[in-house]
Amino acid sequence: MQNEFATLVDGKIVVEPHPGQQRALDSKERFTFIIAGFQSGKTSFGPFWLWREIDRCGEGDYLVVTATYDLFKLKMLPEMVRFFCDWLPGWELHKGDRVINSTTNDTRIILRSANVPEGLESATAKAAWLDECGQDTFKLNSWEAVQRRLSLHQGRVLGTTTVYNLGWLKTEVYDRWNNHDPAFRVIQFASIMNPSFPLEEYERLRKILPAWKFEMFCNGNFTRPAGMIYDCIDQKIHYVTPFNIPNAWPRYVGIDFGAVNTALVWLAENPETQAYYVYRESLSGDKTTQAHAADALKYTKYENVVLWAGGAKSETQQRLDWQAAGIPALEPMFSDVEAGIDRVTELLKTKRLFIFDDCAGIKDEFGRYSRMLDERGQPTEKIKDKETFHRLDGLRYIVQQLEGGSWYIS
Image 1 (cartoon, helix red, strand yellow):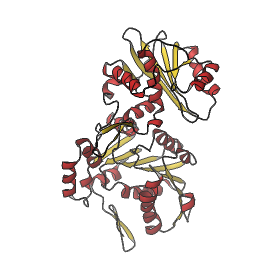
Image 2 (tube, one colour):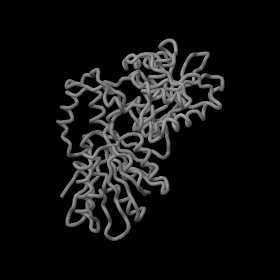
Image 3 (cartoon, rainbow, N blue to C red):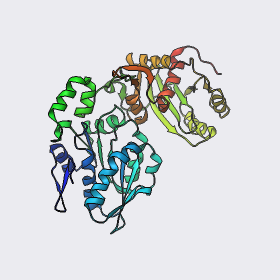
Image 4 (cartoon, rainbow, N blue to C red):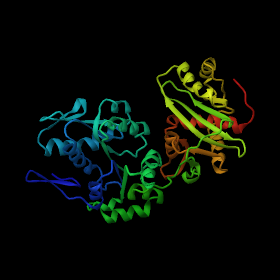
C-alpha cells in the first residue's frame, strides 16, 4: 500500500521524501509549517512526522487537528489509520472517542476538528499536527488553544496547509518566521514538487486560474485574493509596534454585543494628527453584561475613555443593559454595513488608522474579511461568514461615530 510519502514494502515502512518534505524532516524549529500547493504531499507527511515525535518524546498525549469534521473523516482519519493502525503494530482506533491508542503503553493520539475549539482544551499534549490550518474554519482561537495544550512540554507543531487567506497563518506564523523568530520555520513549495503531480495539469491551471488563485493554491504563496474587503491595508504601514500612549490622548471603544462572542476594540487618538490607533482588543463569552462592563470599566481608572459605541440599530435592549451597567454605549449613526466599511476604508487610505502589532485577533479578521465570489470568481456584494467578524464589527461601530457626525445616546 502506498501514499505520496511512504510505502509499505515487506512489512517495512520505506519513506522517499521529495525535497520539500525533506526540509520539513530536517527542521529543528518548534513550529514548522509546510505552506504549499494542493496535492503536494502535505497530509501524507503528517503521520510520519507525528510518529517520529512520539518516538522522540515518549508516552503521553498527542494532538492531530484538521479544519473541519468533514476533512477529518475524508482526509486526515484515513491517513492516520493507514499509517498507525494498518502499518504499525500496537495501535488501535477508538472511533467514537476519536482517539488512536497505543496498546503497549499509555500513549494516545487525540483527533479533533478546529471548528469545535472546545475539544482542544482537554489534554496536555507533547506535540501536534495541524492539517489544513490555513482554512477559514481553522480560527485563531484554535491555534491559541493548541499552543496552550503544548505549553507544559513546550511541544512541537507541524502545520500543513494550502494558502486560503491572509489571516492568522500569515500574521502569526509566516510573518514571525519572515522576521526571523527562531521558534518558527516555514517551508513553501509548489504542487509539482510532488513527483506524482502532472506538469501538464500544473501548466493548465496556470493558464486558466486567476493569478492570485494560482499562486495561493498551486504554489503556496501568500497574495491578496479577490474579494478582500479591506484590500487597501498594508501591514508595513498600518501595523505598528506598540508604544506607550500618552495619558492625555482620548480613547474610544467599539462594542459588538453577543451572548457567546462579545468583542471590544479600543482606539486612542493622537490629537495632533487625528490618527487613531487600535491598541487593545478582546473577544469573550459566557459572561453577564455586568461582568463584561466591569472588565472594561477597570481601564477607565487611568485611561481617558470619552466615547463608547456598539451594536446594530436593532440592539436597543443590549445598549440599555450596558448603560445600566455603567457604560453609555451609543447607537450607531447608520445601519448600513457598507457605509461603515467605507468609513474604515477611508481612514486606512488616508493613513489615519493604525493597529498595534500585538492585536492578533483583529489582524486575523482583516486578513479574512472578504466578499463571496460568483461562479466566475468575481466578488459579489455578500460578505463571507459575515456573522463571525466581531472585532471588525466593533471597529466599524466606533469609527462611524467618530467620522459620521454628532454623538448621541439612544
